[in-house]
Length: 190
Image (cartoon, rainbow, N blue to C red; front, top):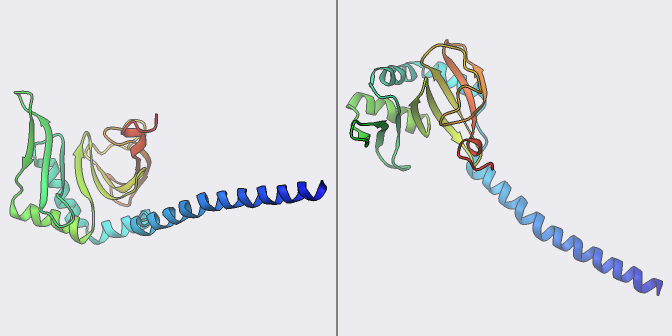
């Protein structure tokens, strides 16, 4: 009887180990594959070096956003090979939205440099900031933030449309490294 109990416990242990391995190994493989495909987010130091090296491009884009006359504006590429697109969600008097905006040749080149050469996903003006979005996964995004009002940001005050969870100052006035959390913003964390 004792031998049968030992054999049953051994068999159950082997089955349990097999089930754990069947669940764990594919999950680990998917996690590693996702990390390889998406990569790791650039560090704050990398962003700061990039800002120093390309300060003129970033400043030209900030000037464009400040002078464009739109409250909400995003500039991005339609897809990985597509053209640069500018889109404003400002409301019109009739209740509609502004929509797509045509950029002049010079600004298109500035944004192409940012989006293609520097590999940013988009640049967005909203509220009192301009966000240069560089890297994102399913939960978090990172990039460079420029504050239009010059005031020190507070994480709890800057939360539309993104929830900034980490903000660190760069060497230049009004420039910051940021991390945001999509799940909080998009209501997926309920």
